[in-house]
Length: 84
Image (cartoon, rainbow, N blue to C red; front, side):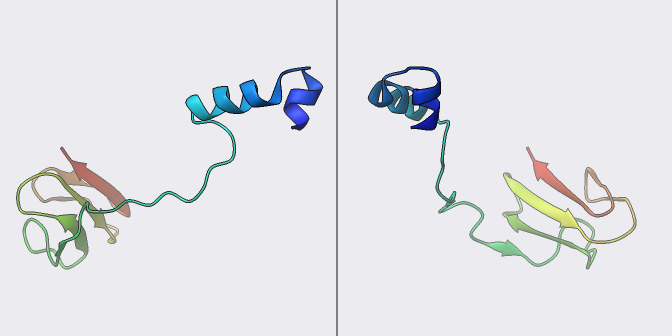
């Protein structure tokens, strides 16, 4: 309301436009149905590589170690890697 008053805009039109652009107040984001199977180990059986997905693609893994490793691909230290 403050934005519409400040700029002398019709409140309903502004709300519709912001909704269309996906701007403004947003609720919590909920992701369902993706990455439901947890992989216990990834790549060359590094204990510190944990992730979700399948042996195929897509997958997402995190490297909790101080070391960069190939899993295949490069998993940087304390980083998250997505494939593809």
